[in-house]
Image (tube, rainbow, N blue to C red; front, side, top):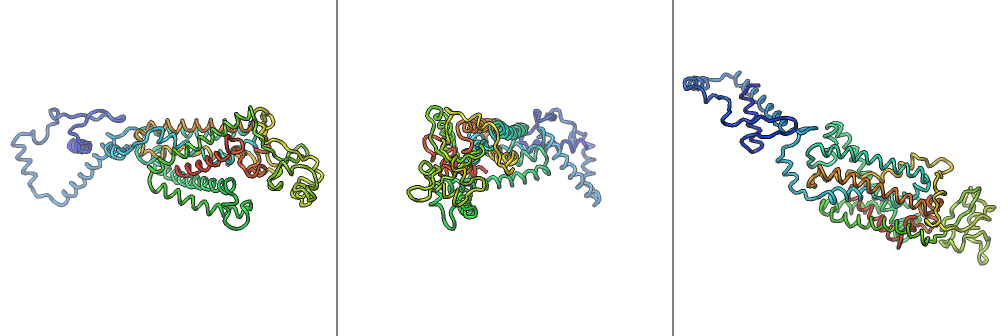
Length: 490
């Protein structure tokens, strides 16, 4: 490259940066500083005779071949100028955009670590699973295997958060969120493929929270009033049809709110997250209260071969205290339980001879009568329908959502600091919440009740709602807000 083209490239860089000279270091390349007094002698510094000769030569006719060569030379100079500019802006990992463009794109950034990364990540991680499936996971897998499953899932997201922090601190993070971070670390080709999978994962996660909110609304909030048509909600096909209708309505509401902009989402998110935190605190207060005054929640049991079988409260006409007994008649009529077991043969595993082993127990004996030893080991289904792989697949979506903060990189004041701190702190916070609630609820609740996924033995309630203090409706409200808030973040 000639010295004239080098000066042309350097002058282009100075024009881009808006100054008359280049000073300082950037990245690992040092930029040479030329003062006006130290300039290399140019054509203007030659003697007058040489200048006249050069001027005369420049006025001579230029042939078409020379014109083509000059055009090619100009293109080479432009490429060399762009290459030197990239070297000047290089900071490691990739060639960074112009600083002026970054400053313009982040001029409206107002979110800090707390509101821009930590709270969105916590709200996105704590979703529907912690309310409607966590107690079932710990009841089926037991305390030992359940803690291992929760720990491994949380460890997986923690390692991902550390990798995200390493990428976010390796240079300037402009708008673009996770897509920019992935493409910068893995390259555009691999980053595009991973980004496509990330998009599919976000879409499926949004569907998970919408369906979770529909299930909570239909099963536990208003199963009779929210019924629109067809068989009752207990019917699987009827429940699926209702999920589609209510899920579509909720998805439309979420879409309208997101369409209004990130400011509206940021204003709604703190309210929903506050309700979620209050519901989690109510669960912990209810468990601690059970150490002094346990909640009496009767459940009906038929024991056979040292295996406890739960009886649905609907079979007992939602009056467990009155009809949970082995009697054949009640006021001259067949008792509901005797009719279901002996006359209608409701179960293949239980027959009329087992009616002598019917009794009531308290489903939530509390920490005062710890169930730690009873719930220590796993209790899987006899036919092998549930195993560790399925448990992990059910629980793992509850630890995802750590990208909610990095997706807002364009709205953060300092994304290089906010993304690592907020994401890692959110993962640690939610992991401690999961482990604490799972362990305490396993120590205070009967294992047979924990395995009642839909709460059919306690008048179709959530187990965590029955444990919570002061009212089960706090958990219902918190679960709906968790689904709604997490759906907004996706």
